[in-house]
Image (tube, rainbow, N blue to C red; front, top):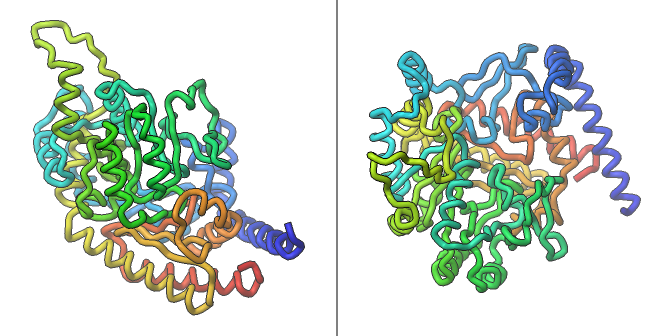
Amino acid sequence: MSAATASVSQTIDRLINEEQARFKATHPRSAEAWAQGRRHFLYGGPSHWMRRWAGGFPVYVEEARGCHVVDIDGHRYVDFCLGDTGGMCGHAPEAVTRAAVRQLELGTTHMMPTEDSLWIGEELTRRFGLPFWTLTTSATDANRGAIRISRMITGRDKVLVFSGCYHGGIDEAHVELHDGQMRMRNMIHPNGVDHARVSKVVEFNDVDALEEALAAEDVACVLMEPIMTNFGMIPVADGFHDAVRQATRRTGTVLIMDETHTLSSGPGGYTKLHGLKPDIFVAGKAIAGGIPAGIFGVSEEVATRLWNEVPHVDPRERQSAHFGVGGTLAGNALTVATMRAVLAEVLTPANYDKMIRYADRLGSAARDVIARHNLPWHVTQIGARVEIMFSPTPPRNGADVVATRRGDLETLLHAFYMNEGVLVTPFHTMLLMCPATADADVDRHTEVFSRFAAMTIDAGVV
C-alpha cells in the first residue's frame, strides 16, 4: 500500500468513527436496546443480518408506513432499503394489512388450501408465463425445491452459479472464484458439503467459461439472476441470456431464473419484460408484502418429467412420499391471502410505472451530482431499483467488483446516510422505490447524496 493510499484509508476510518460517534450520541435508546439484545441473541438481534448496519448498531423500529420508518429514539427516515427488497410494496400497505387482518380472524394455517389460492395460481401463470407453481416459505426454500427437482429429472448432482451471486441459504451457491479456483465466499463455513461434487462456478457474462463448464453434461441446473444484484448490480452483456439458454438446452441443463430481487423490473419481472424462457422461475421476499413467502414455477416439460419420476398417488393409498420440498407452513392461508392482495392491488402495472418513474428521477439526479463533482462513480438502474457504486464504470462480473469496490467508502456513506435520515441496503448501496415513494423522498436523497459527495472531496478521499 502506498503512502497516499494509506493516508486516504486513515482519513476514511476517521470519518467513519466520527459518523458512528454521532449516531451513538443521537440514538441512546437504540444503543441500549442493542446492548440488551446482545445478552440474549447469538448475533445481537433476531437475525444475524440485523447487525450489519453501518452506524455500529441498528436502529430499533417503532413504526414503519409507506417508505418511512420511525425509530424508538423518535428519528424519522426515508427508507430506500425496504427490508432489502422484502418491503418493496412499502410498509403496512393498506391492501395487505386488510387481507392479513381478515385472514387472521379466519385462521392462519391448516395445511389445506383456500379459494384465494385458485386466483393466485392463475395470476402467477398470467404474470410470469410458467404453467405450474408451488409456494414456499422463502426464496431460499424455493431455490432448494428448484434444485431438487432439477436433480431428480436430470440424474445429475452439480449446480452451476456465477461468482459473487446470492441465492439465500443454498449451500451449492456459497462459492466464488479466487485466482481461477473455486472457494467458499464471505467466510461461509463449508458445512460438510463436498462442493467439488455439487457445485460449479464461473464469472457472469463469460460465455466461453459457461459453455466449458456445461460441456461435460454433469450439471443439473444453472441457478442465476437475470442481472446480478448482490455485488451491487452487474448488468448483463448483450447476447448473454441467449447464450445461456442455448447452452443449457444443448446440454440438457435446467435453467433456473431467481428473480427475488429483480422483481423490481416490472409486474412480470425481468423475465417477462425481456422475453426470457427459464425452465424454473423463482421469487420471494416482496411477493406477499413482507409476509415470509417464496414461489417457484416450472415449465410444462419440467412438470411432465417430474410427474414421470414421482407419479400421482392413488388417494386411497397412504401417501408416504415426502418429495423433499416444502414445509407445513408453505402455502398457509395468511401468506396466500396477502399474496393475493399484493398481486391484485399493490404490485400493479400502474404502481410499477410510478416506482420506475421515481427510480429514473433518483438515478438521474445522482448521476448529475457525480458529473458535477467529476467523481469516478456510476449509477446502475433496473426498473425501480438503483445502485450507486464507487467505480467509474459498471462491472462486468464479480471479479471486476472485487478489483474496484471501495468497501470503506460504502461504510462511510451508509453511516452518513443513517445520521441524515436516509436508509439504504447495508450490504451495498441499493435504493428501492415502493408505491408510497414521493417527490420529497427522492429530493431528500439527492440533497443528502450531494452533501456526501462534497464531504468526500473536501476530505480528499475520492
